[in-house]
Image (spheres, rainbow, N blue to C red):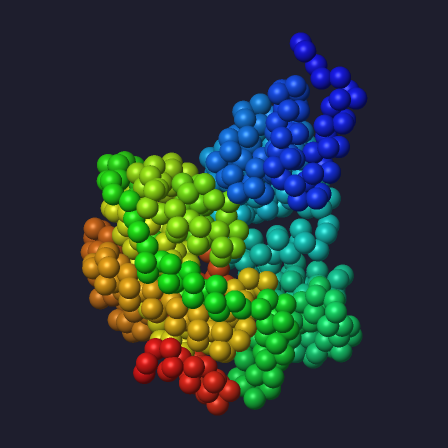
Length: 530
């Protein structure tokens, strides 16, 4: 075997690292490719090469490199975890699951490896498997606040509220400033006058540093302000609740500024989208059902009602179509500029290949049923691509009152994502872009997207769900009217609410803050013309 001399290998590695550290990605790629040719059995070189290719925007080449590693994995648990993470990011979900299946065969794995597997299974929507792994990790000695909070979250998603509460309360006793646990605890259920921790939250806020120069410290402060708001809101002490929410969102707005120009540019580009000619392949296997719309518009309730049907499984909020679209365009997924590049390349895409890849990487989620739900609200931006790649897939568009929808986003505290949700003007702008795009899709693809109105779904669920099922080619089943009996895990901010029977309590919730939301309503009127 022709081995690279050790000194030369060290030189090339150092050279590649220097180029990468300096942002010279093309030069780093050249050094790693030379190293890979001369040391073909060193899989870490291919991993590094995949990372450099990804940074250069060469998604397909990056995926090819890491797939080569996946076919000859060494007995190195941390390396396998790293490979699996990259496979997920590159859209190779089946290969990532195979890596995790291989790790599952390891005898007596250490706690940190089990936690890493749990996080990956959770990211793939495999809630039950993730819960089993994190519980094994705890038995093996995992004792970090992050591992215990993951355990509590998975307990919550699988409906074990009491045990989740015990875990979170224990976390806060040991780590009193652990903001993730504070948020998770108040979101488990509605806070009651006889059992809440309002003074405890206020005590923590008095102790927390108020250092605007430290983003981590400010984020934790925002989490505890949210816990205070959620408690006061549940207790119907609205005049006290609003200032806490305002303080939380002021911090989050500073940490995550909204880029209105970038959002408008994406909407404009999508409305002038040029699609290539050609037909999708004849579909085989389970059929996806897409639920799209604004976040917090009732998509989780519709998902729970529909997946209560004997022929339908829920895949949850997965980003697989978005991943496969970027693969088809050979654009590394990242921010708005990358999506604009995908749109620019849309006329040259192979939509039959896109549809086939999406189905190949997702149909396992159907769990033996004929249909599976892809419930990612942001797929409202993907409607034209879905229609072209998967013309047989039903698309359900959840529609809710604009003010109710925006306020539900404003009070949700999504973390360091969804920057539109922390400012009333930003919310109105974002909603305006969404509404403009939805109108365009209806005009360009008549009948392709069925509007499902949240108010009708909760006031007249029988007729509403019959219309949805008919659109999907399914017969009515009474179980669809009892989503609270749906035993499947649910991993969204609405997980507590949708375990209740269908109700109308969420209609017009914004009126509790009618005066404070005047700027939002005024801005929405300007964007929607009402």
